[in-house]
Length: 175
Image 1 (spheres, helix red, strand yellow):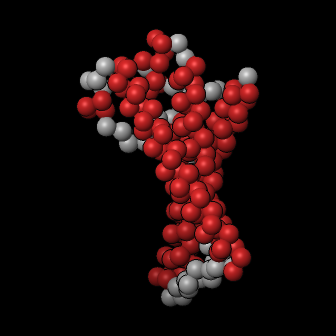
Image 2 (cartoon, rainbow, N blue to C red):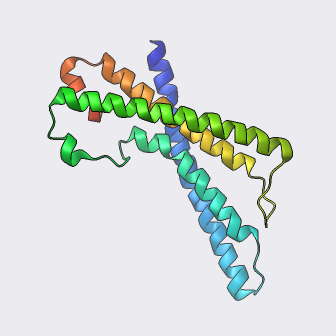
């Protein structure tokens, strides 16, 4: 029962982060448009119009990691794996899940340290003076929810009947 509640929260959070990612892209388009207008029409370029879209792009990518996993849209090599027996496919799915969660833990650990350091000294982008700590935190948040989504999917596949486990690629999480 607790798994279902946690799973529902993770799925809801990944959907919300997916919407946030789309909103960030929308803002990024606005900033780029503003930068182009200022540079080419008003002959008055702004520093933030170059650096801010790069930082926003980082946030957009980070926010959609778990959402993309939820909808099974990450790049996978199915040409070979789809021809393997179901049990071997499932074993490879578990192995890749362990690798993703392990790598995510490393990324979160290292970037959390970087976030704390940047926040402590108020690290800013070189030209525009935009604080970079929030964007590092966005990566941490996105990777945490990617890892949580993978864990929920593995737990859901484990709880599935053997017949359902064969189609593990269709497990989305707990809705």
